[in-house]
Amino acid sequence: MSENTVSLGSKKRINTLDMVYIAIGAALIAVCSWISIPFTIPFTLQTFAVFTVLLTLGGRRGTLTTLVYVLMGAVGLPVFSGFKGGIGVLLGNTGGYIIGFMFMGLLFSLITDKAGNDLIKMITALILGLVICYAFGTAWFMFVYMKNTGSVGVITVLSWCVFPFIIPDLAKMALAVFISKRIKPVIKP
Image (cartoon, rainbow, N blue to C red; front, top):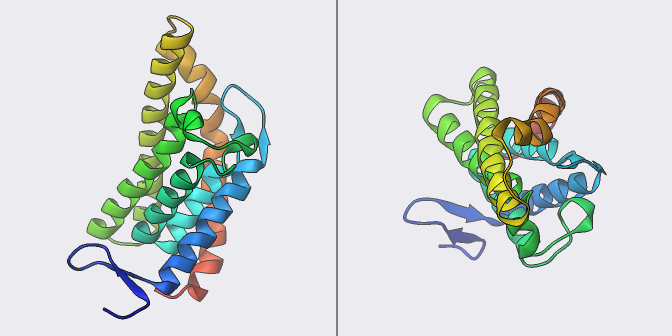
């Protein structure tokens, strides 16, 4: 193995260029998380950045990017919405949505690795990943909310945490598709 590669198991290797793309992607997600409108779950550009990273870098590098982003926040770097960081954010009400980005990346990677990288399959993978992110985040929100505050209904939580975000997230996805089509030709495979 050369100096500029790291083994990720028996076959998969990550090289220096991959690490640079992953670092840039994690920084993009962090910067986009700081652009927010306060709400029960803040409106941010995080999902836009995650979509863009997955579409541009591909499933493997994109998933590693979301993992690096979450780990940066977990160790206390202020990369989450509102310049927050620390394990407490991940264990709080909205932490499930942040962790859900990793599941989105894993599903995107699985689908595009098995079904191919054409635009329709990638958009389908993003939509399904977003549904998984919503589901995990909502379940986590309900668990933490009910533990700290009291009983709450699923429809109430969905009206706080999912319904207001569907249209904006689909618009962010469309913008990410547009931008990634422009950027992807200059990214080395």
